[in-house]
Image 1 (cartoon, rainbow, N blue to C red):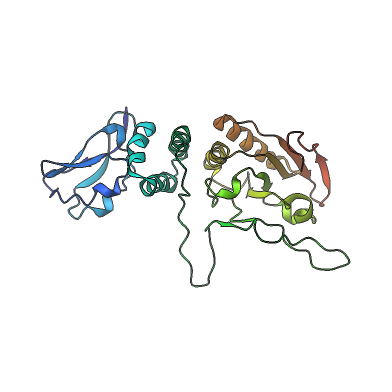
Image 2: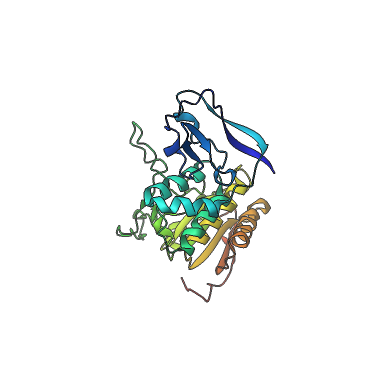
Length: 285
């Protein structure tokens, strides 16, 4: 098959080997004083090794090559311990290779090897914004809503909340009840925190405006593959385009080969509940 793959200019390569550690897949080795691509099967063609070559001897080209084999790669990666495993998973996630990421995670699970949290925290900004760094807030006391005009507290149990930023390996997904919410729902439904968010891990996106639909399907599938999920509550608006939340979830469950009890709640644009499924019998909430 024809695909992107690393090629090495032997005239430029000085055999320093600086590129080898940046290839956790094990595709590069120094042999007879030159860096060699030892197997097409191990090279994902994403170019993590390019930046460390001082001679510019490495490039990515499109050519005939054996198909990349993630499970074969993981057999090699796993031998080098958790730090190399983490680097490899982060590498796949950073390049949006969610299919290979799921295969790598499935390999680790099949072998009984712990799956590390592979998404690196975002660097702190001058303003102190936590950005996309994962934060588990389930151990904080929940601030319940109040009556009589008092302020209503937050039921948020994790950060971040947008699906684009979420790390599928985050521990707060373990045995979680998930709230899959369209972006507009918290603005339309006044009792969002009390009625929908309490005791759930929230995943938010817009099925109409967000340009990452295939990535969203892969990421949801990765969450379902890596964790035992108790139930999923879909909260969406009444407008037809918001039905895409259901479609994305259905495709993710099909891709993951997982069936999870699903409950749907449809919110009207005036803030009332237009439709509400019964609580899934498998796990009442």
